[in-house]
Length: 194
Figure (tube, rainbow, N blue to C red):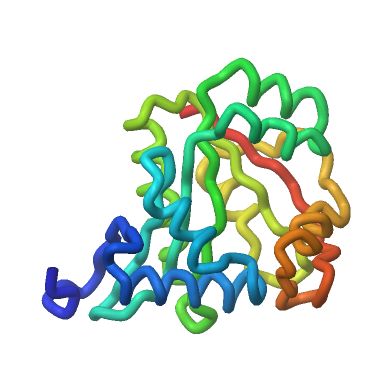
């Protein structure tokens, strides 16, 4: 597909589309922290049947990227710090997960995150999810997904968890663009019925 012929488009990306895949990998690591994803770790998500990697393009340039997936059986424990209400929601519903998203710094506030969220919600509903959850990375800067989630009708579930990303950072070697290594940012969990 010639992306230059369309001013704005959202495309599903897999590793078979190497140029777009590498752009997505670069943008995720640039915005969310160096070494958060390796080529191989992102490839597993992008090429899996129960995952989705989307790119938002304007005039042929990738300005945003976002991921979603079905919550796998063993994935519930990751959300344990958010409390019993969170665990109950995740264990009694077919839950979709909004995974990482990133928008280029100079393109924020233009509806790209909202457009990517709408596409992910539509896909999760299509694959049979009845609920969706997402984490917001609370780093104290002005661009955070909690406002995006609230505007889309999500509600916070459980407490805000301090230093939530520390173990992920230590395991992956990710350097947070806001607080360094290890990441000491907090997180909040949001949920919505589809």
